[in-house]
Length: 54
Figure 1 (cartoon, rainbow, N blue to C red):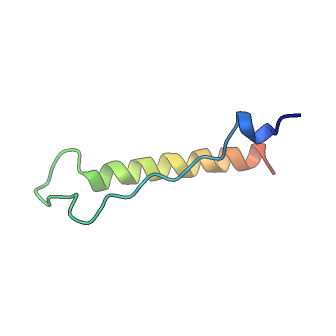
Figure 2: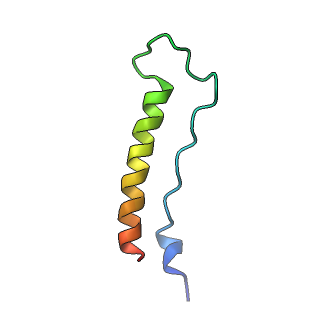
């Protein structure tokens, strides 16, 4: 018998940028902004996963 979670693993949080990854020069796609977007997506995915796995 296989575990149901094997086919639907819990989402993992994104890795935060390391200190110094942001150059503070106002890049269009700042690593801090990209991380925040990934974190928002992770939170949504985790909420959906928790509904599937109460």
